[in-house]
Image (tube, rainbow, N blue to C red; front, top):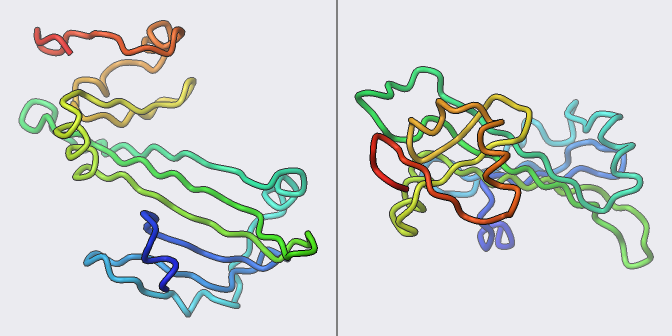
Length: 168
């Protein structure tokens, strides 16, 4: 618990070397650290495909963009979605033997995205090329197809875009 309290993760789960969940900790709605003991040591396992990928890697990440399809663009220009970054790390003993796998989940919800937008004074946009879901700090940005942004991002630089006749 003490180690978990020093991270920004919303969830940390530890799996043994066979992929069975051993420890499941998460932050509740109040930010308090809780355990899901009913899942620990039971029937929750990492799938075989994941375990085979981790044979040759020490770390692996999965980005999940979730879009709220019920957002009302005209009445509520806030972002409609969340971004979850799940990061898996192979845990090894001092002799190099695999002890298990650590799963950390960092979630950026609407409140976090709006906080970043206000601190940085810019609009933020997250997408994965070839996938439909877009998470952004302005609902109009989610109306674009992801292919539109690819040409703007080739040089890895910021770019300007007009949203409702306002330059951003």
